[in-house]
Every structure is written in C-alpha cells, then in structure tokens.
Length: 393
Image (cartoon, rainbow, N blue to C red; front, side, top):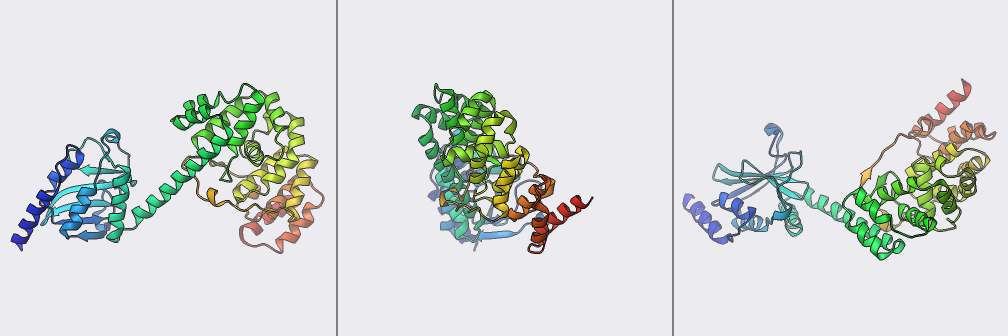
C-alpha cells in the first residue's frame, strides 16, 4: 500500500505543470497528495463537530484535474472578504494535512496557513471548472450558485442593452465603464443639451424594466439622484410628455410612488399625470411595486387618487405578464423601506385599495371592507380587521 502511495505521489509531482503564480506555490505544497476531502464550513471560526464531509476523492486523475483546474488571476488577487468560506478543500498525504483551502463566493480561494498574500481570485474559467468538479463529486451547491450569478450577469447585460436604446452611444459607453455612483452620474450628465429631453431619458432609464422598485443598479441609482436635482419646472414639463411610453411611465411612477418624491413635481403637472401613472403602475407584474404605487397614490390624495384606487377595488385592472427577460434581476443595492402599517402583510390588491380608500374617507370603502372580510383569510383578513378596528375607535 505504501509503495502504491509513493508511486502516486511521484506521478502527481511529474504530472503537474510548473507555473510561476499562486497555483504553482499551492501545487508544490501538496505534492504527494493522495486524498482530497471536501467539507462543509470554512477555514476559520470552525465548528469541527458540526462539519460534514461532502466528498472524499482518492482517484489520482481526479486530484490532478482539480489541481490543474485551479487558475488564479494574479492582478485581481490579494484582497479578501470577512467570511470564513464554504466549502473547504483539505489536501492530505496519508493522514497528514498538507493544505486547507477555503472557497469564497465562487470567486476566490483562501489558503489557511499558506504563503499566499490575501485571497487568490479565480479566473472565470477556473471558477466554472471547480464548480463542475465539485458537482461531479456530489457537491452541487456551488454550481447552482454559479448559475444564479451568471443569470444575474445576463440580466445586467440586458439592462445595458436597453440603456443603449435610450442614451447616445458616448454616454452609454461612459456609463458602462463607470465603477462608482459619482462616475455614473458624471456619465449621465451629458445626455442632451435640452434639459427636458434629458429628464425624459433619465425617467426611461429608471423604468426600462419590470423589476422590483426597491433594487437599484448603479445606473439607476445615478439616474434617481440626477432626477431629484432637476428644477421642478423641468420635471413638470417631462411629466407632461410621458405619453404612452411604458419605460417613461414606469420610471415616473417609481420615482414618485416608491421614492416618495410627489412634493418636488409641480402640483398641476402631477395631477394631470396621475391617472395615467396610476393605471400603468397598478398593472405592474410585481405585487410589491403595485402596493407601493397604491400607497403613493394615497399620499397624493384627492378625487383622482380615490378614483384610481376604486378601479383596483373593482378588479378592473389587468396585471401585466412578467417578461422572461425580467424574471432574474441583476446585482444591485436593495433599499428596503417599511410599508404603511395599515397595509403591511396584505397580498390581495383589493384589500390594499379598500384600506387606503377607507383612510381617504371614500363613502364606499366601509361596505367594501366588510364584504372582503368574508372572502379573504390570513394576513389579508388581519389587515381588514385592523381597518375595521380603527374605524370603530
């Protein structure tokens, strides 16, 4: 047995190519490896009693494939996150642990006790290979996560393709190259000499998808900040020219209803735009966006707001289908804000509309609330019960 292991060690050392990077340092450190254990958990703050062996590999060709498949992007390496990693590769010769290498976010490796300075950033090709190697040995989680990441990357590319339909090519190129919000704002600052045309382009960029309203890519964060900085009269003119442009309507509705900017748009301009904005936003395929829009319409108030909410209560709104291209969202910042306490937890659009109409003093709201209480259950019923209780106090 010892002879076989020694022979395997010699073969392993001869089969590995000599490189001049982190891979070479790691490969030399694990020469003679005859077993790789893949376990749960990371390389620090360990709970060894709770760790599980996910895979144990002794086949020399598989070990060779793993080591050959590790490719490090030296230019991107040297940093590190604050987590411990998961899973972890343990390289053994007999019972001796040669190296312990943690897997971080599908993008990097951390050699605990090794000679690397910081984490080794994996090349894209290597990251995919390691995910597939793990999956072939029964550890499927990393490959699934990689698939989700690639889907988010494709979603980001789709957003940029839409931006290219809105923005002049030089502006789009600068926006795509931006790595900070300040750079993105600077790129978007030169859309058009006409401030109203620029405002409409920003609104279209802000609404060029059917994604969640509380998630912001870098271009969207920049567009939002620039919209807030526009003079009220420019915003008013832009709101008067929304027409039937779906992207502009979504962007304007998101800006007013989700971001609570109704006070910076001139009252007359917002009043004229409100019916169209409400009708478009109430048909959004994502429930959270619809409920945010209804809360926003309630804040605006007045007869047009009540009329819009009554269409929801009557079940007269046809919800748009969620496009396949918008089902997955790109990475970005999430800005969660608490919903109105009165509608928190509600899932039925009619329940939200009924409660908000009641708060507006609509004469038909009380009857609608009592009728709906007989139809709905769970959180929706609780929401209506609260509304009745408040009215009785």
